[in-house]
Length: 150
Ligand code: SME
Image (cartoon, rainbow, N blue to C red; front, side, top):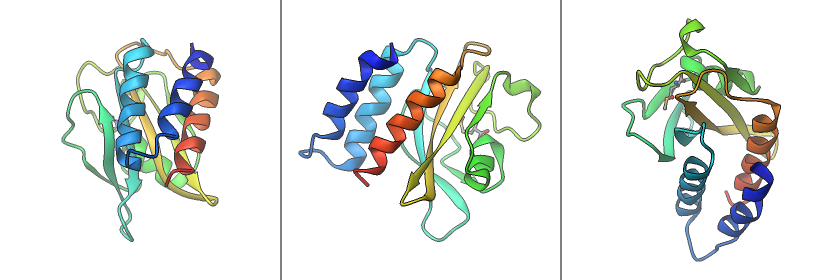
């Protein structure tokens, strides 16, 4: 599944007729439409010099959480840890920001540009415990590609 999507993602990334934002939007939509356990897909980026994340492109239900302070929720923790964060059961997390009651699990993978953690891809799933190391490797690959158009 993941390997079959890679050529399409590469094509989207290389579409220089679109802005980086449009290309990230297209990637969010592709991932959400093609990976059954991806129910919300979005990118958050560091908001200027502030210690907070700002929502960028996303596919799925609109969220109230367009700004997330560093340290808050899964996303805010990844902004500080620089590590992948896989959450099999969101209800088991103390430091979690709920976006929708249907969400059961989440994965957040940091996005590095020149070695600096500048943002992340965030996936919410309505399926319990769906994420494996394959999701991590795939999303690291996606972020690597996105970093090259930023
Ligand atoms: N659940 C995230 C907040 C962002 S929403 O999933 C879109 C968190 O705890 O950081």
